[in-house]
Image 1: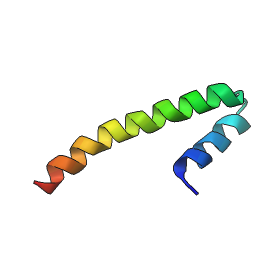
Image 2: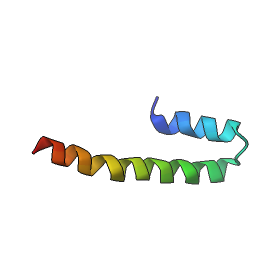
Image 3: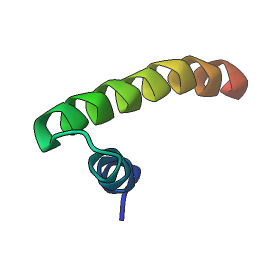
Image 4: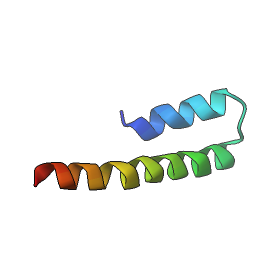
Length: 45
């Protein structure tokens, strides 16, 4: 079970419609990935 499913379940249970919850899920996942990727890349060096 991925973080996307958990996040989507949380967002829909908090009252967001499914389409808007999915958009928020994608944006949050993208923001975390864009933030974490440089940290992981620079840590390897």
